[in-house]
Image (cartoon, rainbow, N blue to C red):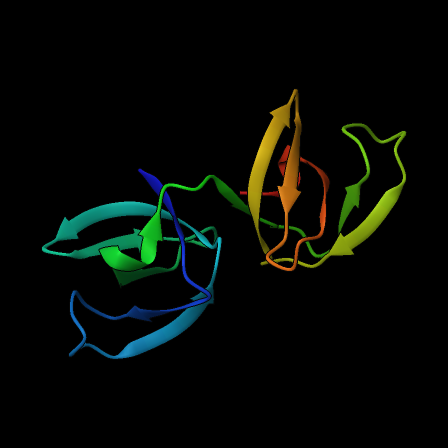
Length: 122
């Protein structure tokens, strides 16, 4: 199951509970692939294959993606003929607004929107 972070900042822990060490933090829209559940905690892996645990209260079903290339062009429309309106680096999470063919309309937490090609995201 694929879920995403629904709060501005979330602690990722080494085990299923607040007594476990915080191993990193992620922001809103960060997508995770669920591995298993233990009580109110989910173990997951991310786009780089890193694993951790997170409280179920911090996760939602919002469709999201994260960029996987060092420089990704975000365009004004769903084709390369449309101008690039901004570029983004690897590891930036976006909310998915819609899909059209091999293109995904995305929105950054700051409100910026555009279209990105599907091979540039996870």
